[in-house]
Length: 315
Image (cartoon, rainbow, N blue to C red; front, top):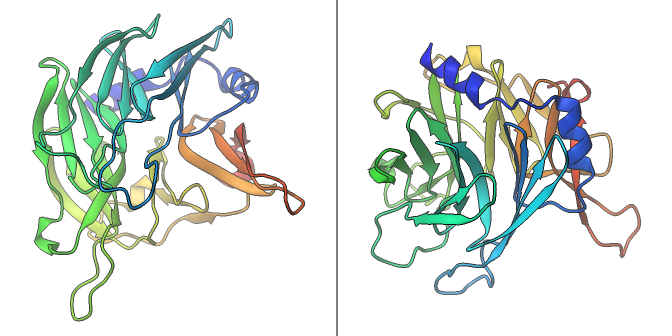
């Protein structure tokens, strides 16, 4: 199957133990942890500088790439806060809230900056890009309230925009994350507007898309508010609510017309705190940034790189 091949090629070449050792040696973390080949990628930066501001502008931030073999470190100044990263065509593509940065994979030198939307205006709150996944020769971007953008790697431009759940207007939902699994593209949708009396509640759940045609196949409602991340392997699809809790679904149970009960809800991580940001799961560990809560009052919360054993999480 094509999508099985894509998943296999995207899987990292480093061993889980290498990834754990190098990740936990890093002094800081924030928005995402990604592993591509022999590279560990860490993104930093804030989304909104001041709540209530009329518009957002780019916030320059830091991108770090660590070689999992020799542990050498490259650091680049990103034009905006990085929220995701992947490799394609021998280049590194870094998704920020405001655009898609194409960088040299070896030096991190910025090659081009691509738009991820076609709006001739400053984007509003939760209109911005939030996550991405490679699907063949495209990069599909979860773009908040705007739905999905499809970036064509051959054209080096967005060639398709897919608004989602427009039938529920004036209520709105937003695409916060997405994952390619089991031959389907799953898009995580959280509500943006609050329920209105005598109106259906805004949709929260998964939109299932045929990745070959980018046509919506079904909508599976039934998740709690606050869903921020979606990731998968060949067995599980996992939804993160700011890292706590994690809801896991068996992919084999997602073939119906409604969202089944989760196969498990993970809220105990063996220590005070929980994962946060975008997480990376391999066959052994859940790698990410751990929000470490203080054990005594008055101490600050710390963000610590951490790899949690899947067997300890029943994942």
